[in-house]
Image (cartoon, rainbow, N blue to C red; front, side, top):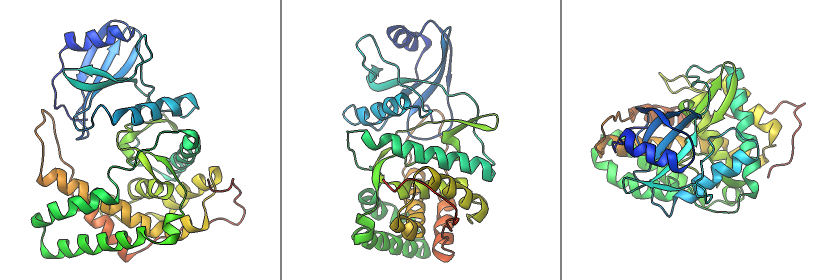
Length: 328
């Protein structure tokens, strides 16, 4: 949530008034993240988040915003987009696409324990199930096609060993994507970026998921892998914590039973998720954009994670007593 576009209180007040959200009392730029301009907005009626979209186009945004509205209507705790009198939830501010959503209560859990991971896993499964009847389809825009286009752009910045690692992993993932088992994996709308800083806890209880602007249609297993690579690792080394990982996947499996192919391909999907974020961080680090408050993430973190997933594959062990619904 960097600030690329400055918004004045007067400019924000106009949109807040149009949405019937009361009178503006506070406007504060948010400093985390690197994709969009975000402001925390306080009014006499509640707390909201104002987002100006810096990369996504008007034509792309209905998928994300309508998905959030769809999930909120089905009881998934996500920020609810605010509509004007005509029901429109995609707006314009300073010539850019904009949205205002409810602000979730609580704070991030940046040092998660097994119980926290279990809550995230269970809610992720509920989210996947709730999205099964969401009709729009948009591919994961940071999926395999994007990796294939972007890796050649960042390779010139890499040392030889890094270049060999990223190119060999891309070749592995390209081959995997053509396999029958992979093509048969359950798919649907996924969050695709559900890191610790995109989940809120109100005390010990999970209070919501947010930042759906990397969402798309992809395998549910990839979404699980993205989470495991952040929620269930030692950040210093990238090593997976088997206790937290087991708790996360078991809780997910209780809500939406994983298929045999999903279980078998989970180690490969963990590698795919690491490759995705190493690639995007390399891109942001070496080809940065200007922003008033911008801190690019360290790309070497996901280089370590990818190396760990290749060297030490992890496999979920389903408890014999576990029950659940068939994979969707």
